[in-house]
Image (cartoon, rainbow, N blue to C red; front, side):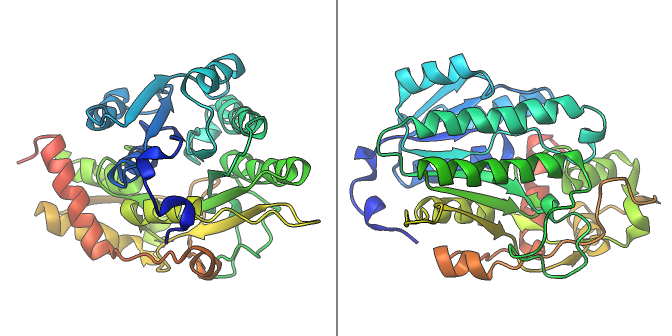
Length: 340
């Protein structure tokens, strides 16, 4: 899953910019690139949406690498981004993962989603389009764009014109903005629709983290839609394999065709949420005190990724089942939080 651009002397290549580098996926993506011998410049603004210490602890894992540089800034700050390009760049490859995440939080703080997800995305694209010999912008979209789609599995050919949360609307807006910039400026871009990501160093607002924390504390475990939920749970290492594979395969610049595409990155399995919880119980050796609840606004009962186009273009194939991935997360959780 490499091309000629990456086949020789990766240390001599220009650095890759990773936005949201202290975030869950950004941290793992930076680790993978560094392991491949690439130089990485990471940016993050340490948004207090969830535990900032967790973000700083992720970053602490990256700082010892001599090929890693970190700059604290807000991607929506045009002046700060221009300064970054002057002092650390220019960047011809960008992995743009900084975003305000979470479907449920978008019901509480909608303004943050427009500022970070839309204005931030625009600012990143503006920097890229003024960069000579720019090669590829890979950015995070989300399976949330599929909204209430009842056709399974979700295909990138499906209609996504009816988002059911503001978060999803901002991610779809990013895709549309990227399409227009690729058309106007012939700038290669790939949007990746991630399906429920989990694994070590995960986000505290995600289901695996919430369930594990509640079971350890002996608290009630909130399970929406009375347990009738299915998710395409995708292990973070597989997600990062998809990100790096996409980066190595920019869309071709063709006459009368914008070099922009959207791909699914998922596990191609739709797992029952209750099976997921049982794996956590088994690893912790404790039973969950489940509280069944109604479906929350903006949520969907099932997700399931069709990755046939992703595989055809990049060679990406997920390899991690939840029976493998959940124990790895629980082991990390017990170590990080000193759970006996």
